[in-house]
Length: 66
Length: 199
Image 1 (tube, each protein chain N blue to C red):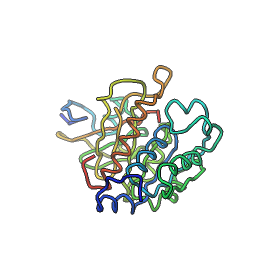
Image 2: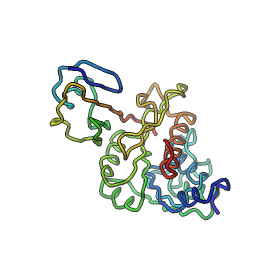
Image 3: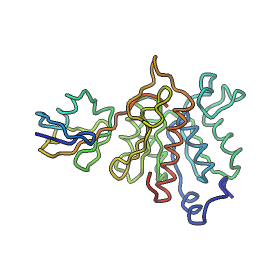
Image 4: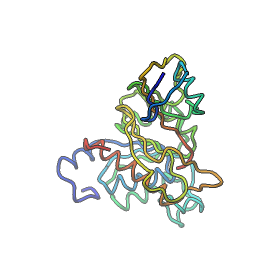
């Protein structure tokens, strides 16, 4: 299926947001995730969020520095 | 009278009647607070547990004669030099989720201004979904790449600034210009939200 990730269309076999992010090496404990218009704070449980064709996913990674 | 004589009455009202929370008084927090007070924000709650040391002077809004002071006390002193009437609630504490919720309960907007990823995640998780706008910064290490810095809304309640990638480490120190850009973008986002403008 194709989803939109960070504004770009990508093909994936991942079934869930958690699975997709694991494949992208994104730690959801250290990221803000926006999935189909809903925002998930760092550490949210994303395992139940199922991807479908056309899903939209955006991630803002938290990085050290301040 | 605020530090900003250029505000229109409605803008002054918008900036002077809210309390802004700032979690952390380091490079992001101290500079963000400075910009907010200069912009005309009157009520700020800022929390940090650390003291000013010499290595902070490369980017943080402190001065050499403040080395050894609690950061929140030094920051309050400096902010009151800009606006003696500013209401600065300086809290010397290491924030955890519970303290953050109670301390910032009366703040419409809270600025995440920590340096560690764990602390950033903690404050965002603690305050998400509580009706506040959260302004966070990540991706501000090193030099150059000014145009990679941007502010973006995430849903209705979060504004994220920075390049979202660069990380402070052995090869990328925090520097005044880039940390300053991020701090100014955080302050600019706070003012924009309060004035109903695009971030």
